[in-house]
Length: 592
Image 1 (tube, rainbow, N blue to C red):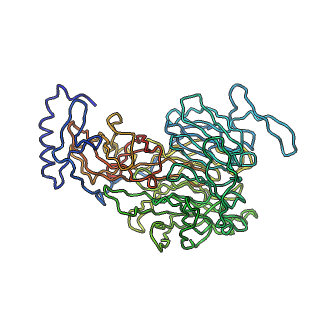
Image 2 (image 1 turned 90 degrees about the vertical axis):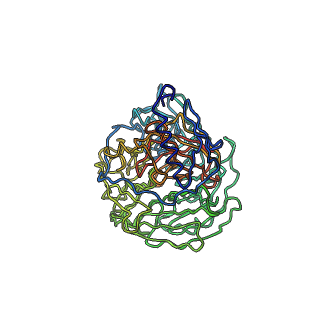
């Protein structure tokens, strides 16, 4: 931002601002740090004559700007090096993608002729020289090969509070492994501890708890849960038995990769097959069981989708901050067994919502435009959900689905029932089993993967897919570009404490911006694999006020950080300023 020195046009604008504030029923000139009642811009500090006047966040807001744009697909890479079975965005704006080592091939080899040994099923010693993990640059699409040795096939993961990617479990020799990948420039690689876990975690779920630690739930024939051991290199002596997982398995399992969400009260919501409970991770007791969700099975291999809907925070929060879960799609319980005989039946076509903080809560069901299993469900900066990838027939697993669902769907949870779904422009690339996606800081969505084959197969009906796409949602319509805010990073606060008042400065081509025009979202980027985005979380922050421009098009919004670590676990988040449905690019913030 330019200095104010030598500018002679500010005083009339300042007078207009003061006049506007004095006419406001709740005048305020909040500060950039929210603590001293002053507004800070380079070269000038304006005292706040109304410091301490705090207004509760508007419950509503002005409607989003209209657009008929249905999104745009762009091919950004023809070869990801390793198939994007697992994806996580790191705070250095690099995406980690990785596959299984079991195939002993990819399209890129390890650098400098490096290899690692392995044994075939017949006990023959061989060397694997292929790269099974890459770091992907979201701007240049360049890839950097990484070395992962203990097989992370169908593993789980999430970002630790310091931004390190923690990956857990996998297949055979990787099933008890914990891996660490820290954000770096160009010299770091995976660090692996092969025997860290007590039980095998293949198709398990990893979730962040309120203290920043991780709980690991389930896995094939692992009816238990445990916590990622601390410090690095330690080994868990024993896991905690969890009969609920034994009770929810069936002939085809249908309870793998359970949906696990941290509730706003610190308890953990766990959904497996068609049942769900609330677990207290401190006492290891189930404190509530919810009604059965009818219609079919929702977890692998039926593979529906789930997310925690956006959490709405206020300047003065209620004693209970509401949390609501959504579960969409999946398959009939018998679908996997039929697919193994060559019969692919339609996937489920419903979405279901449950308020997990409400006693005696009931599921509320609504239809999706099309059936879908193996889809991804991502929360966009606007609070809408993007549903993409997957198939209309069959289930997850090799060769078990048909009729790819190429059409993304936008789901707007706050709209009236029967008005929440909007179909968007389709892709031309089927994204079947082993697809993944993630929201990027610029608001686009990175989409990769798909490999329903036993190994890399480029001639199959649905081949191993190495192409990477980006999808631009409707809010990136070029006609809305003039209404897109731009965060002034150097004048905004990125280190947050719980309950702290802080400010974010942004540019927007408007003389006046109403508080009801603006939302500010904090988004935790997830670990996405097998149709489930683990640890995904979006919060709309409590707003105190928007300060009008002291320079043309420059504004400041004063906010309140999340109140507790149960609401927002410690770590890195992307912060977006959203003006009437049009989000800024995200700025990384860290809360602790």
